[in-house]
Image 1 (spheres, rainbow, N blue to C red):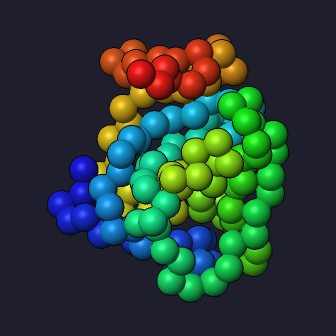
Image 2 (cartoon, rainbow, N blue to C red):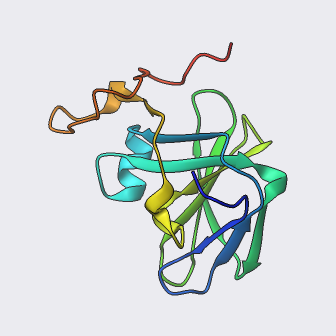
Amino acid sequence: MSTTTTFTGGCACGAIRYESTAQPVLMLHCHCRDCQRASGGPFSSFLIVPAEAFKLLGGSLRFHASPSEIGGMTRRGFCPDCGAPVVIKPDAVPQFVAIRTASLDDPSWFKPQMDVWTCDAHPWDQMNAALPKFEKYPSQA
């Protein structure tokens, strides 16, 4: 994990800048079809942080909403200029923001803890066998 609590990131063109003032509560790869389509790859990687710790420092995100199986909409925030995906804000868990790891200024400290939505994973997607796998969402014990 990061050596400091605060970390920063932004979009490809630099119009969007953000910071988080909290360590991630979870780091994961999501294999759902929406994440595949949004990323252009077999999965999307995220850091989950408390919503109150996430702050836009520059620019305004544009959001695309899609229905979520756990309720409400999943709102994917991206740069309206370059199209780079930056965050996800799910209605079902408004206390959290999911930050795209590719948007981090320093993504080297990302350490995935699980794979979710493996029911949508492609057979050619070679997942890390050491990570816990969840067919959909992890249980909320």
